[in-house]
Image (cartoon, rainbow, N blue to C red; front, side, top):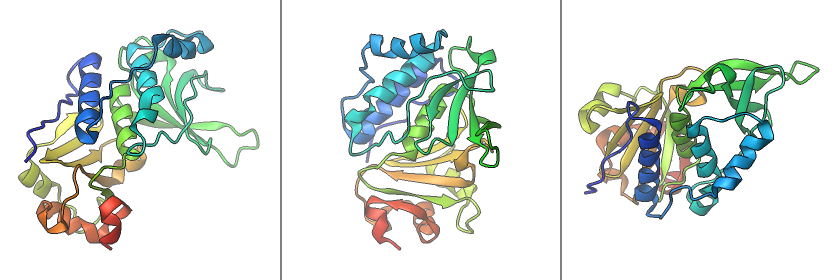
Amino acid sequence: MSEYRLQLDGRADWRAQWEGIYAFVREWLAVDFNGTTPVDRVFEFERSTRICLPPSVHEWLRFATASYGLDPHFTFRDCLVVEQLKDYDAVSLLLQGEQDTYWAIESEHLNDDNPPVTVFYLDYDDPQGRFVREGPWSPTVTSFAFDYFLAYLNSPGGGFRVRTSSSHFNRDALVAEFGPPVVFGHLELYYADGILAALSTFSANWHSDELKIEVQHLTPLNQLPSTIQRLVPDAHVLAGAFSSYQ
């Protein structure tokens, strides 16, 4: 049994939240990782916008630019674009690789240490190629970053997603088996003995109707928690060992 305990706490200050993210990455992937991007590289992004960026955004840039060191267990698959959005008073954190989604900080929140993140989608029907503000993606940069890490994490033990509309999804059963969730921004995180289950509670977030399961070590299906076993037949986006379970 793993003695590791999640160090993620949405009530902590931004520094402690980032420390918790780095601690999880190091534990989960057994790597030495703490976002060691040179400070000058981070400030290049700030100079390009001529805007003073919040400290948690600085840490996001360190995390993102250092994440190549996590390959093959994590893929930073999008574009680290930091720029003033056209038509909006907001500064982007990330542009999706397909160039149809921006995640950004609205300017009214740039004085916050750990501001909320808003998502903007390309309007394909607009001949000018304008983006439309969809709504809040996450309440903090830290929970945005951890959500992004989970989205493209390739855990050593595999993982999958399942719709919360599945007849086998039961939040009360998760609580009974894993204990109450750790609340980290918009995320509910259920963790026990190398198994992580994550729910998003923000409706604008793509993952709001999904439960994401990650398994730290290769584990036979019949040794996984019963709540997880029951979900596998309804799973999608299966990765690693779970690819052979359907």
